[in-house]
Length: 79
Image 1 (cartoon, rainbow, N blue to C red):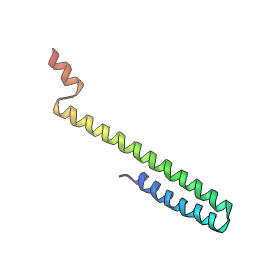
Image 2: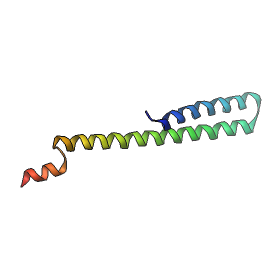
Image 3: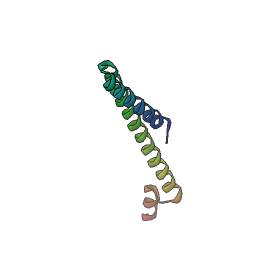
Image 4: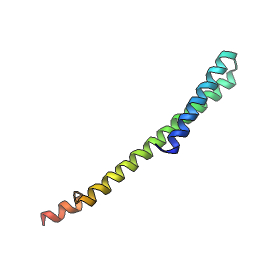
């Protein structure tokens, strides 16, 4: 888990609290700020997930190439 996902989760929770507080006290601007913070949190989490997926894919590719299972190893076996 990277820092973007953590920040995203925190922003999402804080935004939810702001939105619900705004609903309870009838403060529309606070509700809007809460919704905006929730969206920010979801975007940060999605960005973190994408970064994790790329990191995992790169790690798997490096592992395969070290073991000789990469495309270059297959090409050299055919020769």
